[in-house]
Image (tube, rainbow, N blue to C red; front, side, top):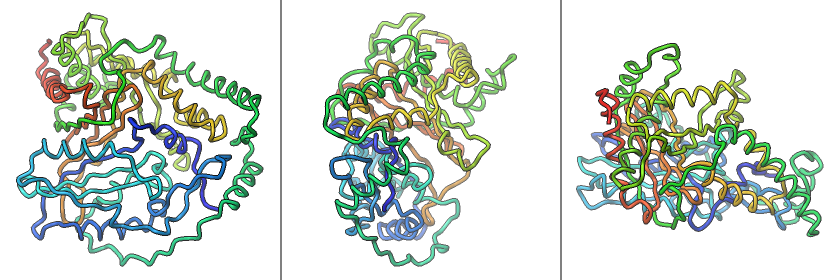
Length: 473
């Protein structure tokens, strides 16, 4: 039988609504190689590298009656040219035009009847540059069987002469509806702890499963509550959102963050001030300027509450994927006028959560997602999404990247910007990644709620300058 989606992966499918697409993306910018780079070259690279990861040729198929999680099956109509696409900007294309293109393309949901990824080659940028824009569904990325499609495209070695000829691929036979049901029942016997109840249609069963859901959610929320004892403060970041987006990229220098850390990280806990803390302090200063510019009321106690996933790697390589992310809830002190004081408050809060075990492990989230049959996952996912706007104002993900060049064939990647999805009731998400001496922000926002997203981007740059100079606002 084919592989079955985990409860956590399946929940990302159920989380999708008309206004919330549950896929992540990246925007990679490249300098042109001397011999040029075209669509056929990109197609060649992708075609030769996805063979090692079968998931990129598989699609999601529901089990009849949704009595078990969906399964991965080979797409017998797999069409590489459908997934790898070509687009162009009016030459010479500007960064603003690229941002507009990303804002239009990224919110569109991935086709559930096909493998859950897309790649766009965007040509026509100024100075001969080009961009590769990717989209990969959360359900596809489990860190073991599949990674973001962007990791397949770029490599640490220049050129693609080492690519072996693509091996012929033949899809496996798709299971029949009867086989899907049989496989679900077999899995229920083999792994009863992962299947609470099959759907029997009785109201008593629904009530009982609902009580178990509430109990599991209570354990999880109890852990979060140690950090987020009160609901998130009222904020223009939390509104009902639509389907249209704005997306803005901000490029900064990693050495600037190192300089700030070196200068301001003093005292008994100096070694505990991290680059991530400096990034969060930069964002906090940006929010302060942005809120004041909007005419929002900002007092000395004003905060913006951020949900910050933090990577955690254990000693056991085999188990690192299951526990590699912990969620910290951090109050960004936007009411504090001193830039250095904002940094130290954030560093203290992060250290307190990490050392005190107050961060919530990814396995806890997975256990919550696995409380009930898939027919009730949608209800649990919607409940969790509705609660998110009460627990935090904005999601900030900061993922360290390699500090040496990456290549797509002979084209060197000069920068890379993440595109993180919006949750229900969240007008903004901030993705940050470092790469080859740069720190790159991708600001994804609801188009109507954040018409001044460019002002926030500029305020982030000003905030970093403020931290560097040591002056206080």
